[in-house]
Image (cartoon, rainbow, N blue to C red):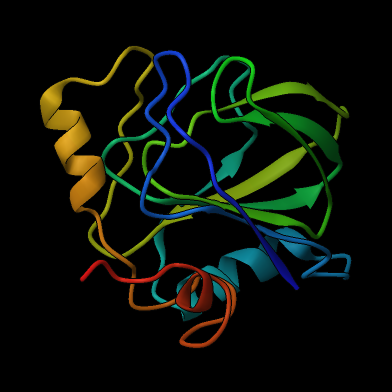
Length: 165
Protein backbone atom coordinates (compact mmCIF):
# COMPACT_ATOMS: atom_id res chain seq x y z
CA UNK A 1 0.00 0.00 0.00
CA UNK A 2 1.38 3.38 -0.97
CA UNK A 3 0.61 6.80 0.47
CA UNK A 4 1.08 10.04 -1.46
CA UNK A 5 2.12 13.26 0.32
CA UNK A 6 1.91 16.53 -1.62
CA UNK A 7 4.31 19.27 -0.54
CA UNK A 8 4.24 22.94 -1.47
CA UNK A 9 7.41 25.05 -1.65
CA UNK A 10 8.59 25.87 1.87
CA UNK A 11 11.18 28.42 2.95
CA UNK A 12 14.12 27.91 0.52
CA UNK A 13 13.16 24.33 -0.41
CA UNK A 14 11.36 24.04 -3.78
CA UNK A 15 9.73 20.61 -3.19
CA UNK A 16 7.90 19.33 -6.27
CA UNK A 17 4.67 20.83 -7.60
CA UNK A 18 4.12 18.00 -10.10
CA UNK A 19 4.65 14.83 -8.08
CA UNK A 20 3.97 13.76 -4.48
CA UNK A 21 6.32 11.91 -2.16
CA UNK A 22 5.36 8.22 -2.14
CA UNK A 23 5.59 6.33 1.17
CA UNK A 24 5.66 2.53 0.99
CA UNK A 25 5.09 0.78 4.32
CA UNK A 26 6.44 -2.69 5.15
CA UNK A 27 7.27 -3.57 1.54
CA UNK A 28 10.02 -5.97 2.66
CA UNK A 29 9.90 -8.27 5.66
CA UNK A 30 13.01 -10.41 5.55
CA UNK A 31 16.48 -10.52 7.12
CA UNK A 32 18.37 -9.57 3.92
CA UNK A 33 16.53 -6.32 3.20
CA UNK A 34 19.58 -4.43 1.90
CA UNK A 35 20.26 -7.00 -0.81
CA UNK A 36 16.56 -7.28 -1.64
CA UNK A 37 16.13 -3.50 -2.04
CA UNK A 38 19.19 -3.45 -4.30
CA UNK A 39 17.82 -6.36 -6.34
CA UNK A 40 14.38 -4.74 -6.71
CA UNK A 41 15.80 -1.35 -7.71
CA UNK A 42 18.07 -2.92 -10.34
CA UNK A 43 15.34 -5.26 -11.65
CA UNK A 44 13.13 -2.20 -12.20
CA UNK A 45 15.84 -0.25 -14.03
CA UNK A 46 16.95 2.06 -11.21
CA UNK A 47 20.68 2.59 -10.69
CA UNK A 48 23.29 4.68 -8.91
CA UNK A 49 22.60 2.43 -5.93
CA UNK A 50 24.28 3.32 -2.64
CA UNK A 51 24.26 2.29 1.05
CA UNK A 52 24.40 4.89 3.80
CA UNK A 53 21.90 6.93 5.80
CA UNK A 54 20.16 10.27 5.39
CA UNK A 55 22.09 13.49 6.00
CA UNK A 56 21.23 15.33 9.24
CA UNK A 57 20.83 18.62 7.33
CA UNK A 58 18.13 19.88 4.98
CA UNK A 59 18.89 19.25 1.32
CA UNK A 60 17.21 18.34 -1.96
CA UNK A 61 18.23 17.13 -5.42
CA UNK A 62 17.48 19.17 -8.54
CA UNK A 63 18.74 16.58 -11.05
CA UNK A 64 17.11 13.32 -9.89
CA UNK A 65 14.18 11.62 -8.22
CA UNK A 66 15.42 9.42 -5.32
CA UNK A 67 14.27 6.16 -3.75
CA UNK A 68 15.21 5.44 -0.11
CA UNK A 69 14.75 1.85 1.05
CA UNK A 70 15.05 1.43 4.81
CA UNK A 71 17.08 -1.77 5.16
CA UNK A 72 17.76 -1.70 8.90
CA UNK A 73 16.80 0.29 11.97
CA UNK A 74 14.38 3.17 12.27
CA UNK A 75 14.46 6.95 11.94
CA UNK A 76 12.46 10.13 12.01
CA UNK A 77 12.93 12.13 8.83
CA UNK A 78 11.71 15.63 8.02
CA UNK A 79 10.48 16.04 4.47
CA UNK A 80 9.58 19.30 2.79
CA UNK A 81 12.26 21.49 4.36
CA UNK A 82 12.33 23.47 7.62
CA UNK A 83 8.95 23.17 9.32
CA UNK A 84 7.94 20.33 6.97
CA UNK A 85 6.37 16.97 7.75
CA UNK A 86 7.92 14.42 10.11
CA UNK A 87 7.92 10.86 8.78
CA UNK A 88 8.76 7.86 10.95
CA UNK A 89 10.32 5.01 8.97
CA UNK A 90 11.52 1.55 9.93
CA UNK A 91 13.16 -1.44 8.32
CA UNK A 92 11.13 -2.59 5.33
CA UNK A 93 9.68 0.85 4.49
CA UNK A 94 10.66 2.99 1.51
CA UNK A 95 10.25 6.63 0.42
CA UNK A 96 10.23 7.92 -3.13
CA UNK A 97 11.26 11.57 -3.21
CA UNK A 98 10.58 13.51 -6.40
CA UNK A 99 13.32 15.94 -7.43
CA UNK A 100 13.24 19.12 -5.32
CA UNK A 101 11.88 17.42 -2.18
CA UNK A 102 13.64 18.61 0.95
CA UNK A 103 14.70 15.92 3.39
CA UNK A 104 16.89 15.43 6.45
CA UNK A 105 17.33 13.03 9.34
CA UNK A 106 16.07 14.22 12.74
CA UNK A 107 17.03 11.07 14.66
CA UNK A 108 17.88 7.45 13.94
CA UNK A 109 18.74 4.19 15.62
CA UNK A 110 22.40 3.16 15.59
CA UNK A 111 21.75 0.45 13.01
CA UNK A 112 19.90 2.73 10.55
CA UNK A 113 20.80 1.73 6.98
CA UNK A 114 19.34 3.14 3.77
CA UNK A 115 19.64 1.78 0.26
CA UNK A 116 19.21 4.58 -2.26
CA UNK A 117 18.96 4.85 -6.01
CA UNK A 118 17.84 6.89 -9.02
CA UNK A 119 15.92 6.41 -12.28
CA UNK A 120 17.88 5.58 -15.44
CA UNK A 121 20.00 8.48 -16.67
CA UNK A 122 19.65 10.51 -13.47
CA UNK A 123 22.38 11.37 -10.94
CA UNK A 124 21.75 13.38 -7.81
CA UNK A 125 23.32 16.71 -7.00
CA UNK A 126 23.27 18.05 -3.42
CA UNK A 127 21.44 21.35 -2.94
CA UNK A 128 21.36 23.27 0.35
CA UNK A 129 20.26 26.72 -0.83
CA UNK A 130 17.42 28.46 -2.65
CA UNK A 131 17.28 26.96 -6.16
CA UNK A 132 18.47 28.98 -9.13
CA UNK A 133 16.17 29.50 -12.11
CA UNK A 134 18.10 26.72 -13.87
CA UNK A 135 17.60 24.30 -10.97
CA UNK A 136 13.87 25.11 -10.78
CA UNK A 137 13.55 24.43 -14.52
CA UNK A 138 15.38 21.09 -14.18
CA UNK A 139 13.07 20.01 -11.36
CA UNK A 140 10.00 20.92 -13.45
CA UNK A 141 11.34 19.09 -16.51
CA UNK A 142 12.03 15.74 -14.85
CA UNK A 143 9.19 13.46 -15.88
CA UNK A 144 7.68 10.23 -14.68
CA UNK A 145 10.20 7.34 -14.75
CA UNK A 146 9.22 4.35 -16.90
CA UNK A 147 9.11 2.08 -13.83
CA UNK A 148 8.50 2.29 -10.12
CA UNK A 149 11.64 1.18 -8.23
CA UNK A 150 9.68 -1.39 -6.21
CA UNK A 151 6.57 -2.23 -8.25
CA UNK A 152 7.87 -2.06 -11.81
CA UNK A 153 5.35 -0.99 -14.44
CA UNK A 154 2.29 -1.11 -12.15
CA UNK A 155 1.61 0.64 -8.87
CA UNK A 156 3.64 3.12 -6.85
CA UNK A 157 4.70 6.12 -8.87
CA UNK A 158 3.10 4.65 -12.02
CA UNK A 159 -0.34 5.09 -10.41
CA UNK A 160 0.36 8.12 -8.18
CA UNK A 161 2.43 10.30 -10.52
CA UNK A 162 0.68 11.47 -13.64
CA UNK A 163 2.44 12.76 -16.73
CA UNK A 164 1.85 16.42 -17.40
CA UNK A 165 -0.20 17.08 -20.50
